[in-house]
Image 1 (cartoon, helix red, strand yellow):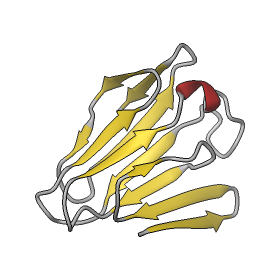
Image 2: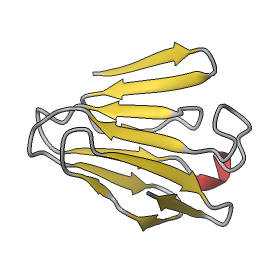
Image 3: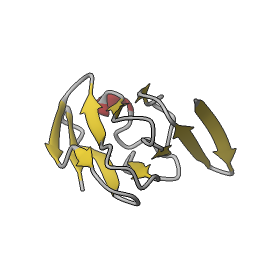
Length: 106
């Protein structure tokens, strides 16, 4: 299930499935209870300096369940520098586009 929630000036995507993140999304919460999940970031070029709530175009990802199933962070375009897996409950990542075709993930 994928549910999009609009908070004032913040777009949150809640999912229990693999998902390609829409470019306008700011926060993704992932429940991997049913199995490992993959979250695919949009092209870093469409997020860099987005001017939204996150001026750097950051996307935040949170694993919400306590299962042993990991959430893998991937990208369809560009490279990832940093962690690519959220293995435990409440593990999170802040994904920042570099402006040069990469995602820095902290």
